[in-house]
Amino acid sequence: MLMRTDSTSVMDIVGIGFGPSNLGLAIAVDEHNRSVGPAEQISAVFVEAKPEFAWHPGMLLPGTTMQISFLKDLVTQRNTTSEYSFLSYLAERGRMAHFINHQTFFPTRHEFHDYLAWAERKVGADVHYGTRASSITEADGHLIVHATGPAGPVTVNTRNVVVAGGLRESLPTGVTASPRQFHNHRLLDHLAALPATDNNRFVVVGAGQSAAEVVEYLHDNYPSAQIHNVFAKYGYVPADDSPYANRIFDATAVDEFYEADRTQRDSLLQYHRSTNYSCVDLDLIRELYRREYAEHVAGDRRLFMRGASRVADVVETDDAVRVRVENLLNGEIDSMTVDAVVYATGFVPTDLSELLGDLVEPGVTAGDVDRDYRVVTTRPVAGAVYTQGGTEHTHGLTSSLLSNIAIRSGEILESVVAGRSLSRTA
Image (cartoon, one colour):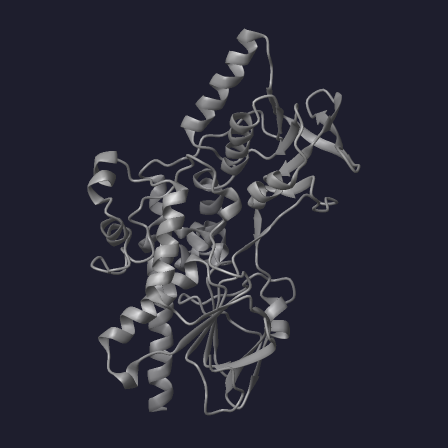
């Protein structure tokens, strides 16, 4: 890795984070470099805080499926003949015919995770795991990424930075993560660390897809446990995956959304929240209802859906969590002692000001972003900073989703290439 601060060693791209978004960018760079001569090739290096490539390993629950088509992989919408496509992965794994016979557009998360790991190994990008970026400064006409790796502090000079910091776990105000109170993002790790008991009890907070999947997993894998799902809605809301609503995830919709005024953008986001937020696949809703009803019939309740409710108070001890649940309709309080509280309470975008300092307004996730995902900084800088995420307010609902990775990566690379060509002719 060219971890030098002299002005003669300047990368074209430094990617911060190496999840699916910057993996898609690494693939786009590789395919670009194969199509041009040496002088036009783009140099890229990536830093990732995790010790190895992983995509939500704590939520790779058995049987859970993707909510997007396999055609919305890392490349297909940008390059239908790419060797990095999900279909190429199936062919290399010897499962093409089997997948076709499966007659589905939605692979399991386990399989899609394996596809992503396969693509990461195949592209062979210059990725430095266990290396966390801390800040971005500028000097001598370029940007400097400051990071800390296994061997200590490192710096790398670059013309462009692409931040793909992903999403951060969001816990309710006043909640501190602990071995018995934790976000669903690392569910499997936390469950494995809990002491085994004969009759576990769990509270799951949230009413979205992740909450419902956690409830189903706990009900399946803890056959003597009680599971209480607490949420403010009266019941789960079905996800809207109808064809017309799904057009909001099309690549062409990004142009239309970006050109719209702020009022119309806000309206569209509100109209179509049920395509992505606080909603659950209808089949899963029906399955959980079937289970709850069967327990009513049998007179042996384990699954409790506590709609129109909230967690009013939580007190954690060494061996349990005391939870008070308030019914929002009548004010009644139900107290219970449980082994753990799982918060399926969503995520928040990475705060860019932590990396960019005064180049963006404090606390802003992305602020103003150009159509090519370039962050509009508070003052001119010697280079460009792009963001893969935190752009829902400017680019629409695909901001933090897999749906548009292929197109977005290509657009960022095109902007980098154009900027490089412009600097050479200036």
